[in-house]
Amino acid sequence: MAQCKDIDAALARLERKIDAQNKRIGELEKEQKRCCNDNKNNKNQNLADIYNRLNKLENYCQSIENLFAQIANLFKPIISIFK
Figure 1 (cartoon, helix red, strand yellow):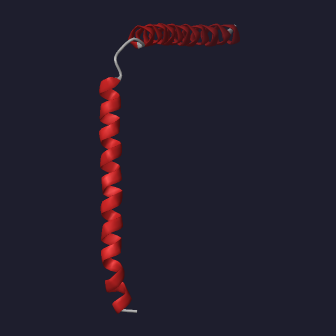
Figure 2: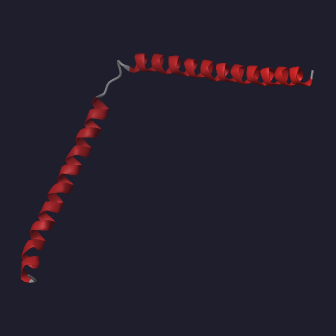
Figure 3: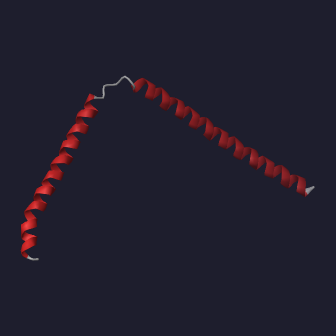
């Protein structure tokens, strides 16, 4: 008899866990649908601002690369003195 109560209790715990998991899955599905709908609505937005910022960043990175190349060229004669 005690075993039946233990089994019933274990089944009840399992049912609660399954219900909680199903609730989480439902919430995730709602979030996914909301996100997909937001993405569909944002497809028509203007990306010019993003492209402009990207171009500025690329130009800045290029200028840093050029600066480091110039610094390296300045150090070459100094390094050759010590060789």
